[in-house]
Image 1 (cartoon, rainbow, N blue to C red):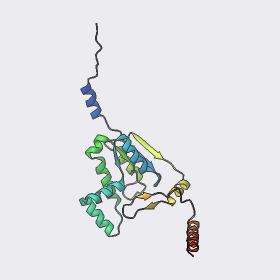
Image 2 (cartoon, rainbow, N blue to C red):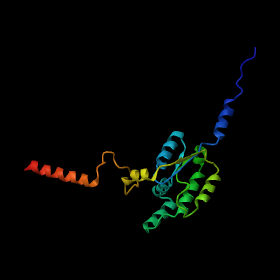
Image 3 (spheres, one colour):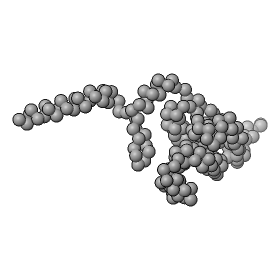
Image 4 (tube, one colour):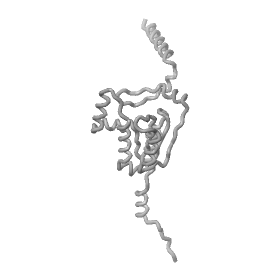
Length: 192
């Protein structure tokens, strides 16, 4: 009687899985459309590394690295952070061992700014990455919707964290100020 034999050895399957290319994503779209929010969620679900220019710069400040000190000096002089430096940080992160092992979700390339590289050159850079993207997500949103979405966004001055307008503040600023004045007058009447 022939016995059923599993031709797939567990060790071979495990080795094949470990040597397989990790899943890599690129998210593109207009500024403010939600690329970073989607990228963060994808990186959490797929257990890959989120690469965002703002996060990379923040980590350099926080760790007080050589680049972080240079960035502090640049911003202290009132200058903008050079695109070439940001691009260098992104490329270094893409080549790091943890990204090579887990994969990435990239939400900051191609950049709309062409200060350092033209968009065509940025796309060529992406095409020649060691880990090419498996999934490219293009988020599209009409300009009118973006204007509505971003018109009430507030940014915390110390952390740079963005906060959307609360849903309950749909009143116009003038009418809100007027209602606060009326409430103040009512309170004065009650005290009298």
